Image 1: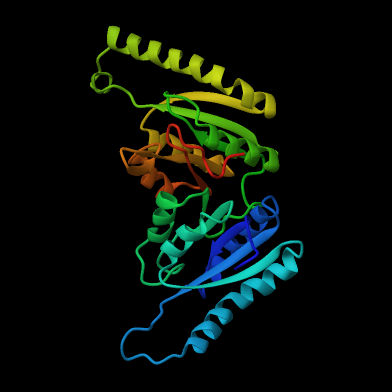
Image 2: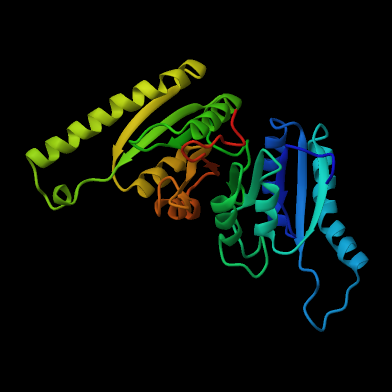
Length: 298
C-alpha cells in the first residue's frame, strides 16, 4: 500500500451482491483522485485445526479481489485499482484505512456481504468510528439507479449548520446535478401530541420559525455555491422524517460528533434507524470537535 494516498477504499468479500457497492465506490473514486483500494480482510492466523500457509492466505484473497478488479478495468478504466489484502476483521481494517483515504464505501449488509456478522454490523462500526466520510450502499443502489430528478438530502440540527457535512452535501449535489434539500426535523412536544393547543403550540411554532431564520442565515454561503439549495423545517420524529425523505433521494447525508468522549451520530439514536431503513445511500460525515481541525476538510 505504500505510495498510495487519498482516494477511496471499498471492502469486499466473495459475494456477487457487492458489485453495485464496488461500482458506486469507483464512481466516487473519479472525484477523489481516481484511486480505489479494494480491501479484503481475511482471518489470520486461521482457527485451530485449519491448515493454510501465508501464501495460500494471499492467493485466496487475490481470488476474491480479481473479479472486482476485472469489472472495474472494463467499466472504469480511468480508475486506478489497488488490491488491499489485510489480516483480521473487516470493520477495524476499514476504520484504519479511513485515516488514509478521502472516503470509505461499504455495503449495508453484514450477513451475505461480510460472513457471520449481524445485519449492518460492519456498516455501523465503520460509520461510527471512521476518520473520514463513509458511504453506505444497499444492494441495487448505484449512482445511475436513483430517481429521475435526483436530490441530495442533508440533516441539520437547530444548533447550527455543520461545515464538514454541508461541504460534502454541496459537492455531492453539484456532481449529481441534484437539488439539495436541507432538512431540520422538529419533534412535536409531548403536550402537543396529547392534544394540547394554545400557548404550547404557539411557542413551538415560534421556536421553529426562529430556528429556520437562523439556519437560513448560515446556509446563505452554501446557496451561493449551489443555488438549488432549499431549507425545510418539518415536524415529526427525526428518523421518520429522514427515512421518508430518502424515498425520493439519491443520497442522504448526516454527521457524527464526539461528545464527552463518546462518538455518536449528530442525530443521536436516530442514526442507527436511518442507516438501517433509509431507501437510498447514506453518507456519514465525521465532524471535528470544538477547537479541532478536521483532517478531511475542504
